[in-house]
Amino acid sequence: TQLLEQSPQFLSIQEGENLTVYCNSSSVFSSLQWYRQEPGEGPVLLVTVVTGGEVKKLKRLTFQFGDARKDSSLHITAAQPGDTGLYLCAGAKQAGTALIFGKGTTLSVSS
Amino acid sequence: EAGVVQSPRYKIIEKKQPVAFWCNPISGHNTLYWYLQNLGQGPELLIRYENEEAVDDSQLPKDRFSAERLKGVDSTLKIQPAELGDSAVYLCASSSRGSSSTDTQYFGPGTRLTVL
Image (cartoon, rainbow over all chains, first blue to last red; front, side):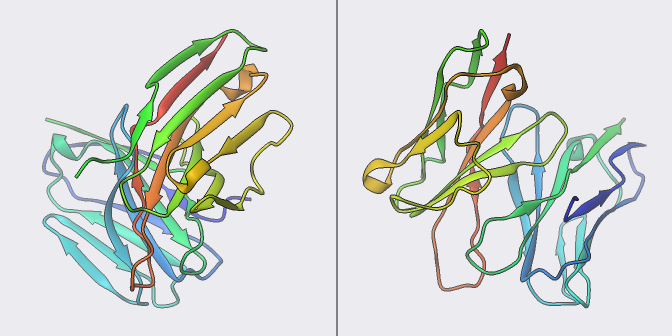
């Protein structure tokens, strides 16, 4: 059973389009993180959300943590080819415990 | 500041052979993680160290996998003997327990293992 379900698994869009990636769970997490991974590299942290309902913005990326701290979303506005990569959500059940990763969303943005 | 260093970056071996991966975490990071990542999937934890103590190794297949973190700095992950299904990317990450409730994990580039 996958604790964190990410959708969609694959996304192929044109430059300039908007997109949303979802990360859902039936479990509550103390914090949730979003990572981006490029081929041949390790995941790189984009953001950490810890408060239910929290919204964080990183340039064209908007991250939201659900009120109940069971789900999160990543919205990209006006996607660019440089946004191409594997987007991973990861949650910690408690502070200081290992992260549980979702299976990821592979995003391809073509020009 | 140097990031997490892993070596080798790539390794190709025949099945039943042993293999070892090495990780040097970010200086001062007391927590070290080994993850396994299959193609197009998220990382899965194998083992977590706090200094030199393995505090979570419940997902480590102990019949063939072993790990050590002598002196609480560098770490080595070993597979003996390797099986075809072990082909994957092995990621090392480190973090430092700060005053916040979340620990940021910094990942190395990984070692891509291919078992033939």
